[in-house]
Image 1 (cartoon, rainbow, N blue to C red):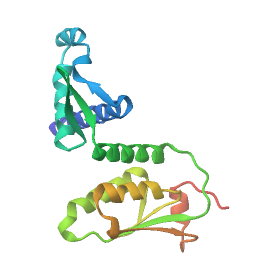
Image 2 (tube, one colour):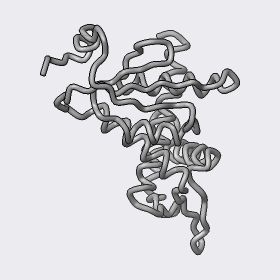
Image 3 (cartoon, one colour):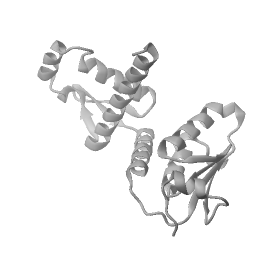
Length: 191
């Protein structure tokens, strides 16, 4: 395995840990750091690789740095609590997962997303393209993307996450000229 592949896997692993911690915070609400079974964690030092406690602290630190969570002192222990920004990020992640996993029947309408993000926000524009591609959108033209199913909630969350509200338009179209290629790509049958 090449060095770039290893770095990519390591980065992906860290992101998964942060996501898992974020989900735990959302599910449990308030997680007491002292309640992470300290006796059990001592045994984990005998396992190969990074100690779990270090990885959890690092993931928690990154969530705090991104302002997705905050440390709160409760008695003698510190607790990690989800912030509003963390809740929004989590809602966005769940929206992406639900959009990818749903098996739906096509209603014959196309959902189009057009955007005009300024050059000074090139990184945001790239992230926007990346997120739409990861969900399954296909590029029709340079800044015009198409998807066959309802994704209004996802686009609203994407706009909020990337702060590109006025630069992104969501369009529902009854037909697109020469849509045979699109139908084939999405495995859609005629109505």
